[in-house]
Image (cartoon, rainbow, N blue to C red; front, side, top):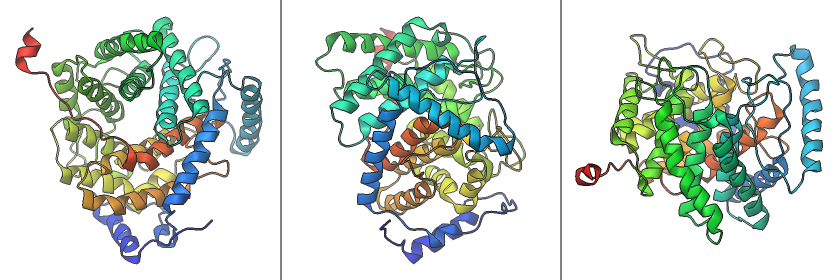
Length: 435
């Protein structure tokens, strides 16, 4: 594969950053060799070609979901065989429903119902993220458009009919908020960019769904101020940050969003920020400093939400972006990528936020001063190229189905320089709120 060698100054800078981005002294993981010195940075032409190949893969992955039993944790010597068998099963189902698929479910270990099906929050959330990537990528042709519109109708139907997406206070492990937040985000962006023009009925349904989703997110907000799919005790920076970005977009598009709800969520995020800009996994940062190796995938997202909410600055935001890009921290995340299980020592890293971290670090970098963006963009490409798979996609889980989510997140990270800026929070004028 033809590519361009990174500049030596840039390579040395990122090796140095592996230490500088960690205010907490932590022993490096065993595999954290400075591989950046040998990496190639893909050219823009290679990036563009990879995005197109990834979009073609996503189109082929759209499916008519048939509930299937969870796999559980397998012996390591059985995992590869199961993955090959499962990949073949999914390929057969997708081929049989080609042109009729409606969704891109996210698959994790969490299942619901007596038949152990993928929860609606994962099905809608995964579909919204893939729709976002397909819509944002250059070359939005009719095939992509029809696939995305089928996804939109699927999401609207689920939001209207599935009780697993209804308004509900968060009382236990429940991922409905993911689906609500990402559907809201996509509906606002796609509607604002004319996706539903010419289809009055669909535009009306989307327009009605947006305030409904805002209300459902309000119902799920924790008393502590943020959101957390894992329970009601304390807010999650992952989910709180993502939800706030969706609400900021909705407000910027002219929809009513309660300022008090946003302020409480921003307070919750601020409480989780450690002295080194590494965020606690949930709740407030404690007296013990949080190592950035364990926090790298969540900190840029949280800091971006605070930045756009008027609670941060470029210096803090840059610290979290560079915390993710630093070799030592990225290697700690890589150790858990595509592995079984959830949170494992030494840093409590779970595999499922690997590409989440790439996407939001890339998006956050685009809100830094222009002169500082180029080196960070190139570094992000280097990291994404390390994990690009032969099929043209990415996957941070053991489940073949989750290739769709991971690939969409990687595409959005690569497209970050071309995406519209995330809107800042704009509270309504006091006079308007009083009416």
